[in-house]
Every structure is written in structure tokens, then in C-alpha cells.
Amino acid sequence: MKHLHERIASRAATVGVIGLGYVGLSVASALAATGFRVIGVDIKLDRVARINSGECPIEGKEPELPELIASVAKSKKLVATADYADLAECDVVLIDVDTPVATDHRPRFEALRAACRELGKVLKQGALVIVESTIAPGTCTTVVAPILEKASGKKLNDGFFLGHCPERVMPGRLLKNLRELSRVCGGSTPETSDAMVALYRSIVQGKLDKSDCVTAELVKTAENTYRDVNIAFANELGLICEAVGADFRRVRDLVNESPGRNVLLAGAGVGGHCIPKDPWLLVHGVEGFTPRLIAAARSVNESMPLHMARLVEDALEEVGKSVFGTKLAILGYAYLENSDDCRNSPSAALIEHLEDWGASVVVHDPWVPEYAKPIDEVLRACDAAVIMVSHDEYRSLDLAAMKKLLATPVLVDGRHVVDGADAKKAGLVFRGLARGRDNA
Image (cartoon, rainbow, N blue to C red; front, side, top):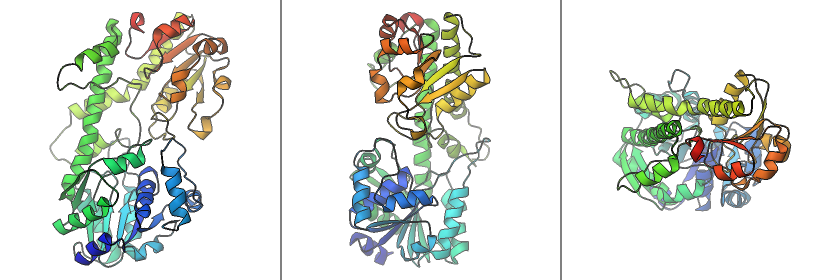
């Protein structure tokens, strides 16, 4: 470990990164830019080819990342491959693969297990393996270490070392988050944590806290669960305001004037890879415990697309239409503004509800190639437009032009993008999430 620490400090260590998605590609590029030789592994051959040609495969707005990838690919400091055998020379290997949950809320660690099996076959003596993917508490001990030991024939803390340093990045600010946010370096030994700090200090300006693996696992799942619960409170408060005819935004502003209060924005649904599943990872495998608050928060947040469908239904009824037989335009399909990330998209859930009720649906999203058509083409002859993502493009909509394009002048806003008074002035029948009709 002392020798590995020295190689990391001198940038002589070769670093492998398994999984070149939003997280893995960002950290691989950042490490390569500081002088490390980085080998990235991904099963998607088209992604490997694009990275090696210096092209950023992420379509959303990602400041600095396209330029960074072009630079490190050109210098060959970052090389992408689909062959795990290329990791045989790596002193440190980061694992950044998807860790979803199944419909029964149990972890689906197939990608993590596969990555550990393949890595174990070629794992260098004395290498440090760091799991950056979010995992349930205890996963390093019960899943990762046993697979690596079996596949490599090496023993933990003898033939290899293990750590967990959960990522904290968000699409749209990947490099900024990577540099500025604090990280928890949970190691299988204190010396392992020291080596992890040495590695991450090369790219992280924020605080680096040392811990054991299970503490790091708990911190990441707990922080996302905390946010999920807070979003659920905002959503439920928004539904109350909507029901009694109050303006949620005004209520929220006044509540937040009280010290220690920070009510979040109510919204049309919670998406992305992390928050919808990390609460279930947090409680997974805890014997004799039944989550109540956490489960209730998940239920509230998962219900928001259905509530949006009911708002659409209500607005259409005002103009004498039912959802059945209508053509509806959904504005935004990514889960986050100005991003192409569609994982657990609330829009997908809304579309399923509307189609079940007999509507036909067309989608617009400027950041998702499949839906990046001119917005006028999508809106034309539709019976309603529904804003599901607060992309910059939707904040400057020409409402008068929208009314002319729509067959029926109905607009439903799930992200507080449109001022209700402006919509009504343009002649649109308007519904806003968490806004009573008189305060829309």
C-alpha cells in the first residue's frame, strides 16, 4: 500500500475506470487531465469509438467536458476499450456502473457483479479497487470483496485493497460537482483510505473525509434519501395549496423566511438514476425494520406524474374535451433541465397514464436526439401542451404563437416555468402544478 500511495502521488499509477457513463467518463477525463494514464472500459462499442475519437457522447449541456475529452483523447492519456484485459496493468480501478433496483425494490447488482468478475480475472497484485457506484450498506463486504477474491484468487487487504468513494455529481454540472463537492473515502483499511485521499486530491478541491466502507455506503444512500423525503414534503404541500386555491410559491417563500427552513419546489415527478432508487438501497437488508417515512415519501413522489395527468384531464374538461381521443404534446422527456438523461423519466410515466386513458402523445425535447424536432411541428394541431421539464427553451415560449398552433388552447405547467397570468392573457386555458386556479 505504501508503494501504491507513492505511485499515486507521483502520477506514475495507471488508473482504470469501468463504466464510461456520466460519472465514469467525467472522472476518467479529469484524472487523465492531471497526468494519470487512464484506461476506460465500457461495453458500448459506439461509446468507446466516440471517446477515442475525442467526441463527447453526452448530448446535454456539460460545461468544459467536451473540450476536456477532446484533449485527453488526443494526448492518449485517456484510452477507451471494451476489453477488460487492458486493465491488467492498472494500479487503481474505479467501478462506475449502474446499480438499479427491481420493481420489488431489491437491488439489481448484475452490472456490478459482472464488472467484479471480469476485473478479478486480470486484477494486478496490490491493486486498489474503488467502487464509486451507489450501493446498499454492506455491499462492499458481502458482494464486491467475495467476487473479487474468488475471481482473482487474491485476498482482501493482502492481494488487493478495496474502497468505496460514492460519486456526488449531477448531469449539467459534472465537472463542477466533481471538483467542488466533498467526498467520503471509505477504505477497507485506514491506509487504503489514505491512498484514496491521495488519488482524489488530484481532482477534488472539496473536503475529503476518511471512513470505513460501510460508513461511505450509508452516507451516499442517506443523503439522497434525505432529498427524496424533502421533495415529497414540497410536493405534498404543493398539492394542499392547489386544493385550497393558494399559491405554493408564495407560501414557500414565506415559510423559507423562517430560520432553518428550506422548502424545495414542488414538481411533476422525481427522475434520474439516483433518487428514485437510493432510498430502497438504504433500507435494503436491514433486518427487523420496516421503512415508513421513506416508503411514504417514495409513494408521494412516484404519484406526481399521475397528478399531472389529472391536471391535463381537468383543463381539457374546461374546454369540453375528455382525454380520450386527444392529441397531447409533452414538452421535455429528460428528467433534468438542459440534460439528455432520461433515466426514470417522469414524462415516461405521464405518457403511460395518458395513453392508457386513450390519448395520443407527441414529445419534444431539445436535448434528447429522438425528440429534438422544431417545437412548432410538435405543438401543431395538439389539444394541449404539457411542460414536464424546465429546459431553458421552455422558459422563453411565445405563448401567443403557441395558442395559434394548438387545436385546443390548453397549457399545463408542471415545473413553474410559465406565469399563469401571461398564459391567460395569451388566451390559453392554464393549469399549474401546486397552483390554485385563481393563483395560476
